[in-house]
Amino acid sequence: MPVLTTHRLGEPCWVDFMSNDVAASRDFYSALFGWEARVSDDGQYGGYVTFHKNGHNVAGLGGAMGGSDAPNAWTTYLLVEDAESTEASVVAAGGQVFAPTMTVGDQGRLAVVGDPGGAAVGLWQAGQHRGYELAAEVGSIVWHELNARDFDAQVAFYSDIFGWKPAVLSDTEDFRYVTFGPSPDNPVGGVYDAAAVLPAGMPSSWLVYFGVDDVDAGAARVRELGGAVVREPWDSEFGRFCQVTDTTGGFFVLSSVMAG
Image (tube, rainbow, N blue to C red; front, side, top):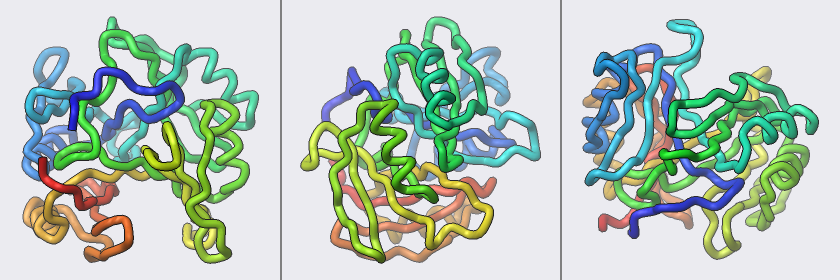
């Protein structure tokens, strides 16, 4: 796959993991995906980590806000022109603010907001940092998925605020799903109506998929590294997948892709 130098406004451009044990998370993901970890600031584990594959940005890692009691989770960031004005638009549309807009040196500006279904999503206004440079290949992000508790309201929210033009993949009683991206034939993510499967009290959430060339071997490696398999590998018309957690309980999905 070509190296990405730009991302489309309103679509995912970055992912990072907020961990209450940055050192353990750094070691886990480096070993699982063969990523190189580069630590900012003073070089200590408390600094922000940028993961690289073949010299290209693929993901980030930082300390969880709130310390040891904070959830360990991946965050998807959507590219925006102006993080502060988008934050205001989110609030006006019924969302909430988890982390107000802040400046990250010359790298850009970010905020973390919640959509009307309670799912946390990041806003990224790019400066020197343009986002991940690899996608849809082994060792990189391949898919972003919103598990939505309030499907209709959330699809409308992202369409209004971020300019999505959702394409219906399925609209049956058992499976409602729309995709978004530059075209129905080239989607970058999707929204799943998860109201019937989310446990009571659990809000909507964004889920990240990472590419591996062998899902079963990837699942075995997760276990070797101290993570867990939540759902054993399964096949679908879209590929082979496995739901896993890392050593801190962070949830993500392994997805089959062809090795480049």
